[in-house]
Image (cartoon, rainbow, N blue to C red):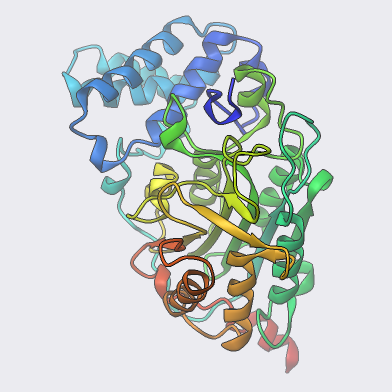
Length: 394
């Protein structure tokens, strides 16, 4: 079975382990993730929505060993049923979701991301900046093909963030996880650290370079990132040991108070990254589509902060190319180059344009990075000096 085609990767929630031992609860949690990946363009696709609803129904009705795992599934079952054909039982399902502790129900999350009201304006000075940088070239599971430069790309990117003349991030505020250190637990711990420390006026940056599974190639429509210790021996093990994009977005939305969120995605899907599948120098990246990074993960549309932005390495089903001469991926090399040339003070929209032009000029005109953002996300400036840092100087 092709790694890219293996169904389901994930749950970073604490319920992942017990859910993985019960196929029904696994189905419930996986279906809830699937529901959160639904985007506006799918609203009229009744056949696809019905498939999601069928999985939600199976999961909610059969998950009895760990009822709390199905909490969000009950919630999305009610919303999706109402979307397709209102049913008197919707109120009962919503009640079960609340009784089981559904976070989605508590936050009244919409069925489609475009309905979510952006409530966190990104204005005023930045108090502090935090970054999690993840790069995985080698994996514990030998069935996962090794990559060439993600670890180096991540190391170099973290260095430029900490450069006092460019990124101006405090060294202690930049967490770098490479290869064997980038386990699922360690990634979650790093996100937890940011969750505890970041305040509303802060800027949070997340950079990930690894294998990934785009939602358009997953039977459940869910997008995933592969951690160092992800086990791809079966759908249940991938589900339990991978990292769903929907969970990352939910964590940033629900638990991180920062108004400004910047994501950089240089994530390969491994089917095309297998030996012999790609030409020399090519790294097959997550397809993100002409519409932007949201085509990689519909969960990106769920961001509640207006100050979010996501930049991905290539569009559609293209490959992001690596250079033996540069000993780096083109995407990260020119991202760092653009940051240095502007001393980190260019808004993301301008930084993206420079990156876009450089990558397309040195590889092929159609191999272009893409960007998606909220209303204020394009205005984010990574190198802005944090207010807390300025205060420390006086």
